[in-house]
Image 1 (spheres, rainbow, N blue to C red):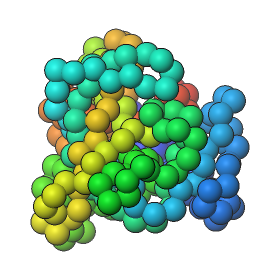
Image 2: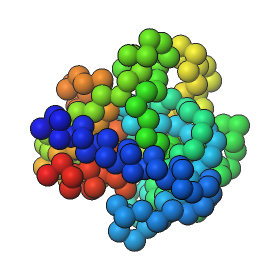
Image 3: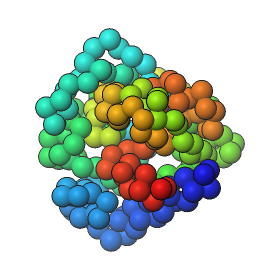
Length: 213
């Protein structure tokens, strides 16, 4: 099963990575894994939350679909370069731009294998400490997972081990109990499944499950 999961992620990463070669930043990209939506390539700084776990705030958050969910906050590394967004999802308003670039950044997605990991305090060396490790979490834990795709983040004041981070506000309980899900948090430690991990980002999640099965 582990090899199937990793293979599925590599397949999707390769497909998404190809978008960077085919389209320019800001250009809308039709992607087969999204039923009727379009993806957009954003250029510049973004938070990559794929390997983060989160903390309950006791508050709620409402997304563009009009639904309200329990809110968590996640600390995520900030990267610079092309990233994938769906500007109709999360709390985005149809654009890659934020209101205040000096304090705000979007949580988006990019097909990265190596990037600073929360599990290792966001160190940048050695390289092995920055490798994303995909693991599958059982479906009874699905409601605890977080979805940070297209959510708003605020830059943290001080870098952690030289890595700029941001605190992102994200919804939980978007996945129904019984739905197995994929995470990169914890570098393979299964305890991360219980720590409100960020799950495989929509809109790629359903495709990952389909390939896996």
